[in-house]
Image 1 (cartoon, rainbow, N blue to C red):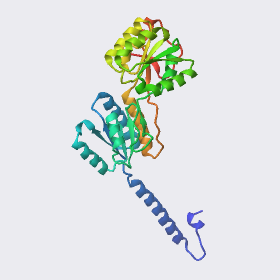
Image 2 (image 1 turned 30 degrees about the horizontal axis):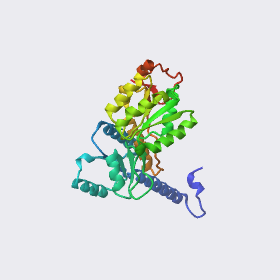
Image 3 (image 1 turned 30 degrees about the vertical axis):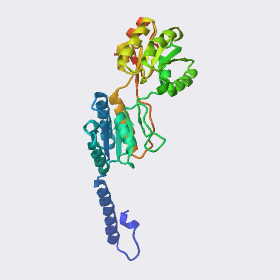
Image 4 (image 1 turned 135 degrees about the vertical axis):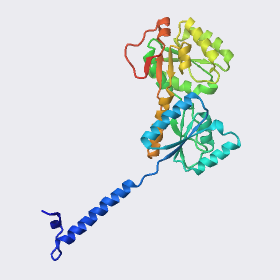
Length: 324
């Protein structure tokens, strides 16, 4: 049956309907082709970078690749080291006039700028590569992004899996900066049948005394980012003294691992950048944005573990691996 027969009406010749059907079909196809040909503007993303250092550069590289491949975004990177004083005011004005769809702040200085002086206020922004992200300007909640904070509970689960003989964890910290972390650690440890022994210090000179008083009360020393404790020379002193006492140390970056920590939580900065890029792409698509746990790896220092007589876990766990 010819298509025109379906549309036949008494008194109307078939060719009329054939021409009408052809006209309609051509209009539909041409309209669809026109819509397809009309390009959707690529989203514009501004990445503000605190400093020109390797971790930030690697994070931006990973972020840029994901945003380009998954969102087709046009990316502009603004290193804040090049904009100081009045030039930063000019930068903010320029950013406000560029109609960016999203800002990504990398590092604390960039996050501070985006938090205290939104650029511009109505544009969404994410953070990356920062500890303890600050609250949004004039608001109580924080923006979303990828921090460098690994939750206490997640760290404890990893420690429990990698260092099975450790039951009493000595947490070295200054209550002025990490009392909240300590409370979360205590809560998380109770579920895992671990005990957190507080090693409180208020200055660096307190550290040797506090450790001497507690060596017999702990199975390991747990070091976290802390303004009072953070110092390469102090970290090396603690690790050296702990190894002498046959007690493992748990640290939070590659430096700790290379200095002799039995376990260290390590970040791949390009991987963190890719994680931020995926979150940014979802934000551009209008999806919800929440704070995510950063992707991390737990390196076991087999040389140190062997020296301390600590057995390597037989079961394989995600994120836990022998260090290089």
